[in-house]
Length: 337
Image (cartoon, rainbow, N blue to C red; front, side, top):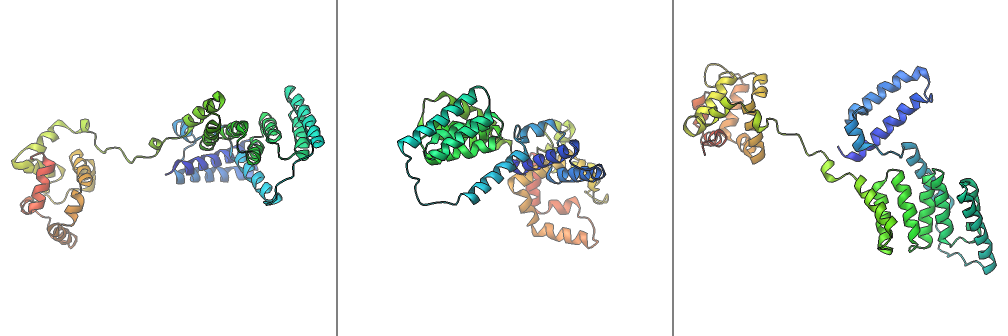
C-alpha cells in the first residue's frame, strides 16, 4: 500500500485520538470512536503504536488540521479573487513612499516579535502597492513567525506570482512547506530558488534537509521475504534433495516424509505441506522461474487433478515420474542438473 495513503490514515487516527483526549468527543461516544479507530487502522495496515512505522509515516510538525486550513484558505482565496486579465497599474511615487513607510513599521514590529502588528503594517503596504513582492514576502515571514504556515505559503506564492525571480520568496515558501511536512514541495521550492541564485547557502541547506526527509522508493513494500531462508533448510533435507538418479530419490523421500504420496499413504495433509521447508523452497523456485505455469498447463497434471477431485485414486510416484516434464522438474529442483 502506498505510503501516502497510510500517511493520511495515520493523520486521521491522530486527529481522532486528539479529539478524544482534548474532550471534543463526548464521553458517551468515546468507546465507539475508539472501535472505529481500531478498524480504520486494521483496514489500512496502520498501527499508531508501532514506532518504526510511525517514524516512516508521521508528517509532524504538520497536523491534519493545519493541512486542511491550507486548503480552506487557498479555496477562499480563489473564490474571493477571481483571475483577472488586467495588470495592476503601477502606484505613484507618493503612494510607493507611503507603502514603504508601512513596511518599515512592520519591520520594527518584527524585531520586537509583535507579529500581528507587523502583519497589519505589511497588509497596509500591500494595499498601497500590490506589485511589490517584498511586502508579501515580509508578511509571509510574520505569519511563519507566529506559526501560521498556511498563510505564509499563500503570501510566498503571491510574491512569486508578482515577481517569479524574487529569490527570497522561494526560501519562505520552502520553509513553510517543510514545516507542514510537505517535503517534496519544499524541495521543489528550494531547488527553484537555487536555479535563480546558485550560491545561496540558505537555499542549499533547505534543499538538503527537505530531500533527506522525502521517503525513497526503497521504503515501499518490496513484497514478502523468502519463505524459507537458505540457512533454515535442515541438512538432512538438503541431502535428500540430491539423492538418487537426477534427484528423484530426494523427491520421493520428501513426499514420503510429508505423508506418503508415493503409494498407499494418500495425499499429505495441508498443514504438512505448508510446514515442510523443502516444499516451500521448491514452490518459491517454481514461481520464480515459470515452473508453476508450465506445471499447471501440463495435460497429464490436469487429468490427475480432475481424477482426484472426482474421488479417484491418488497418483503414484511411478505415474508422476512417467511424465517427462514432471521428471524434468524433479531433476531441476532436486539438484541433479
